[in-house]
Image (cartoon, rainbow, N blue to C red; front, top):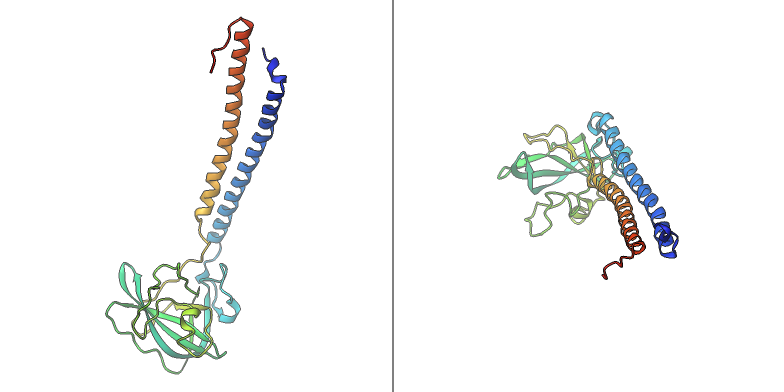
Length: 251
């Protein structure tokens, strides 16, 4: 009854099944390994000291900003200069603005410093005079995709919609660091602005995509096996009907 398995058609089907199932299992296992790697990386980051728990170091040692240095405590010395408001920023469900003051560092470059958050309608306090040393969480320059940025333009004088070197380069004559810091202890009665989590430090959507792909590949393997058994049973039933002299119904 199963002599049909030796026909060229079934040789082709069998070779496909023999190759397809291990391939699907391999791809599923590979995707599962990628998911486990992302979970391990996330757990290691949580077990290690947080960026804000490490000792503060000079700004130059943490640049350029990346996943490892974002959120680290950085120190810089200089004198405060121009000051701007960064409007439409939320803090604890309230609307207000960041007070952004530019620090002309001893190295000659300008560092954007968020001294704190100001409620809507409030007046920003003047920055401290003279030489100061600031300590704050290092942050990467904002982009158009950052939450809260204002990209529509039309802001009044003294306001900027985005904290980045690109948005400040035309407002100050000095070179601007491609980074900024938010002070842990705000001055002038302002509210400290918490540092944002580094991009890619959490268990992001890609990890769960890997897990979803894992399931898909294992389902494909099961589907191939299911279809092979279904074809085998149908062919065996047709062969048995022929042996009994029963012609299968035309399809």
